[in-house]
Length: 232
Image (cartoon, rainbow, N blue to C red; front, side, top):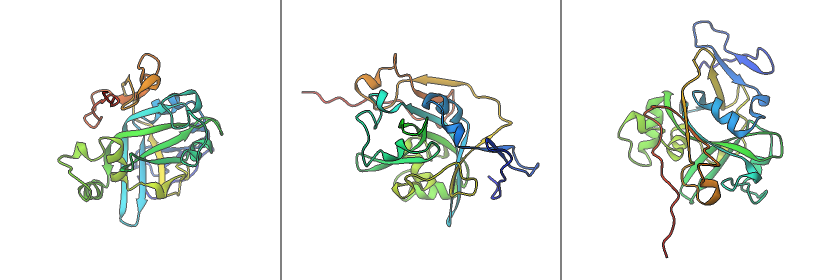
């Protein structure tokens, strides 16, 4: 993504250089929709993180929608807590959490202020900064191919260099360190849906919550795994 972006309208921020892809950075109102609507539109969109080490951009190929206190699979199902407070804030900010005390997962807050919905960024293709993203992954584990760099939510967070220090960051800030953007010239991709990964109970019922969405046939989409259930 070019370093310089300019705001054309409150809802559509276009890159002015005609030699570059027609990128736009959605404004806050774009995120102030249902988590399922935002999830669909995030597929094929990109997220960029600028750091002193360099820039990494990931094109999103897999996401999951969560609907706050109405959704038994959501971290906000039982109400507000210190952990999930970002979900109750303005849409267009990051909600980052640590899964099982081991891995970070990155979500984008959406929906109206105070309703706590969010979209989990599950997987993607590194389109810029692959060398840096691969080095980050190799520093913490195995990365045997380019398609594996950001294949899964923990790997995506590592590749982008995102962790709890980025909790609450605004992804609608054109000049910010982390920004979500879209290529407006790209055709709407074919999308598949299914049960969310690792979600047990009612929230894992695919007939009610087929809210894992991915780009059909994309090799960076992660493998589906049902929730682990203990045996007695």
